[in-house]
Image 1 (tube, one colour):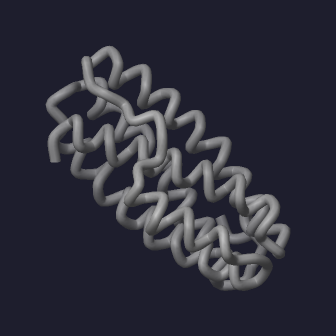
Image 2: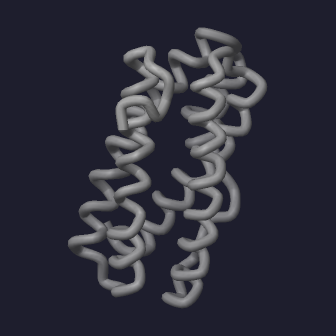
Length: 148
C-alpha cells in the first residue's frame, strides 16, 4: 500500500466511523452503544484532522467526503436500522472494521515512505485497539469501559 493509498483508507475510515457514530446517537437503543459511538465520533474526527495536516505537508491528497463504495456498503445499510438491530450490526461492523484498520495501520507504521505518516500510524494504533476492545466488550453485553 502506498502512502497515498493509506491516506485514502485512513480518511475514509475516519469519515465512516464519525458518520456512523452520529447516526448511532438517534438509531441505537442501548446507552453503552451510544456512549461508544460518541467516543468514536470524537476520536475519529480528531484523527482525521491530524491525518489531514500530515498528508497536506507530504503533498498527498486527502478525501473530504465518503466515497460511493463506502456510502453503499457502510452507510446505507445502517440508515434502515433502528434499536437493537442497529446496535447488533453496528457492534459487528466496528469489530470487523477496527480489526482491518489495525492491520493496515501496523503495515503503514512499518512500511510508510513518509516519516510523519509512519509516526502518525504508530501513534494512532492504541486508539484503534481501544475501539476494537470496546466493541468486543459491547458484544459480550457488558457496559463499555468495565473490563479495560
